[in-house]
Image (spheres, one colour):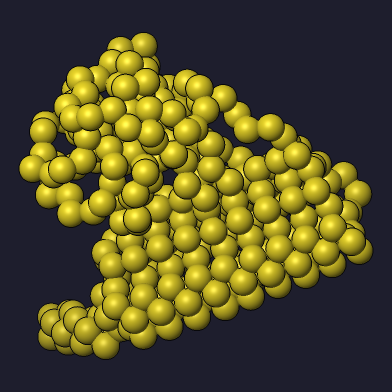
Length: 288
């Protein structure tokens, strides 16, 4: 199966009950984006206020979209992704691109002019802008860490998204960036990433960010523009970090933060609040 398709066809594939008219579906959408013409799988029973043309849910919602009712929307997504045919493979390499020894260019790769691909890098399902630098040993576009538990054990969720790397992005050695599940993993133009950083599937990173070695960003996190992330910081899935934030080294970020916040600690808090809390703890222990 390929998009565009119909809601009736998708309901048949995922063994769901369709409520509402049949209509053309152009692709799979995210709940936080424009859903016109898209089908969106809702994993949590919360009120959805978006404009999706079709929803896959566990229970009927008070929403005008066509709805497909299934016992488990996650399993429904797995069935749909499994049924999709991969797009035609293409490899496009721009002018003055330098590819180091031992680098592997797999399927569906586009490299912009003037980019440099380091020795031993592996590229698949990725679009790289102009003037980018991909360090040696990087693995870009491998499927993300996504599994669903079935009666037959864990099954890997197929990934159909890509990685999109903007102009002037630099990646240090041995970085890994997972391709998106159904939407793209995006690295904004001008962002500089140090060695041994992992970026999970569906992550979106804004322009001109700085990310230091051994940081990890879990799936579907959204990082704003001009954000600095210190070494060994960890950011959980689905978290949103606003523009201009500073995430200090080794911070464990489990919730979202607004723009221009300095963040530290485990679990991470606003830096001033974390310092005051630490000071109280130190005073208490000094009194004993």
